[in-house]
Length: 373
Image (tube, rainbow, N blue to C red; front, side, top):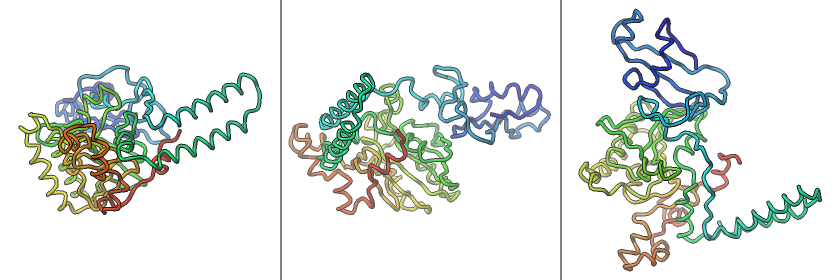
């Protein structure tokens, strides 16, 4: 990052970034951008009181590892609890990779993976050539994987959509955009972490991104409220839809929520009104809106950012008016009937595409191409 200014202004730029009262920090793919709105600092540097001064900018050229989004290595480890940089804490690289989680129907795949690893380890230890055996196992692995995932039941697809290691909204955004800036607040005094909004570019074109964000571990899930937005989250989303309309940005929404938060506080703040207002207003937004279900699409909490010109779904995502467990409890008085409810609800992308609810399905291989390795 290249610092601008003279005298103590340049020397204190780094400290200024840590103070919410001294500047605004935006998070982007190339580094940090800070703009000082402190009138006293401007007057001390000889400028007009109240004027806007840029105190830092992104250095042009190839991005080094120390400047990569979302968490530059030059910042000290640990949580930053004060100032504007605290917003960066929530999606920095995890210190330890997530533990692998195997779904029950995936056990044949895992067994083949273990066999392949064993044969490779044996080849390394003995120096013998097991190329043909490994190739045969890999062919078998691909075949079993295609067969299993090509014949998933609705409940199995639901378990894939809820997988704890499934890519989140921010994972998708950071893999498809050239640059990304997260924006905060609903202009009503709230900022819901469960609803993430921002502006990003792809191939030189700007878009407004809006999506529900699940956590990658228990701590993040508690902070994100398990991707169940409060009313201020939906008002925040609508604010940025109007922002997109004003400046001519297409809107891309990413749906991944079990539903809107149904707590007492949410009802006191007007959860139903916020969702209904979004439904009405989205029909009148004069820029293209493309909604994509990337995981769970639960009830009105999903629909409140899902009214668009096009509705897309990932191949193993689900979209429902009520979860199969809730539906089973209501109709059959037992959650054990959830598989039966899932069949009746038509929650999968394939069924919804047949019904015309979904315009297109994004296949797994296309999503995998954005996640090398």
